[in-house]
Image 1 (cartoon, rainbow, N blue to C red):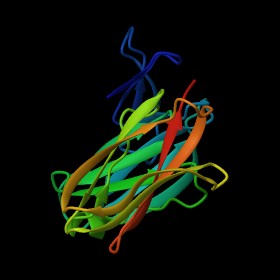
Image 2 (image 1 turned 45 degrees about the vertical axis):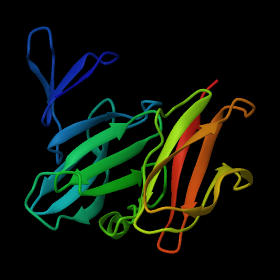
Image 3 (image 1 turned 30 degrees about the vertical axis):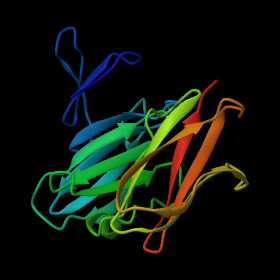
Length: 208
C-alpha cells in the first residue's frame, strides 16, 4: 500500500483509491503494485512478478496508461521478492531468498543493470551508502571473503577521481568507511570498490 499526498491517491495493489470515500479512481494495467512517483513526477513506477518474471512498468501520471515495460529478471525460486524504491536517487532495490540475493537497478539508466548477485553469494558485497542522500558525511560498508588488496574510490559525475577512501590490504570480513564531503559541492557521486574478485560501483547523492 502506498499513499501519495500530492495527488491524494491511495494505491493498494493495482488500484488507485480516493482515501476519503474509498472509491476506486482507476485500475492500473499490468502492474501488481505501485512503487511510487519519480521525484520530478514525470512517471509513476509499478512492478509485477508473474510466472517468475519480474517486470517494471512506467505509467502516465494522469491517465495511468502504460508507457514502457522492462523485463528485469527471471526469478530462480518461488519466494516473493521484497521491493524498495528510492524516489530521490531513482534507484530500485530487490531482495530475494531472505535477503541472500540483493539486486540494484539505476532507473535513470537507459538500460537497467543488475548488480553482480553472484559476488554476494561468494562473500563480496558493496552496500548502498547510508544515509543517502547525505550531508556532509555518509557511511559505506563492504565485505570481502579473504584478506586481499582493496581500493575504494569516489568519482564525480564526469568520472574524475575525487578521493581514495581505501587503498591497501584488508582482512576478510565486513568493513565500514566514512566519506566526508564537507568541501565538495552538492550533486551525484559514484563510489567504486575494486578487489581481486569484484569491481562494483554505486551512486550516492550529496545535498546542500
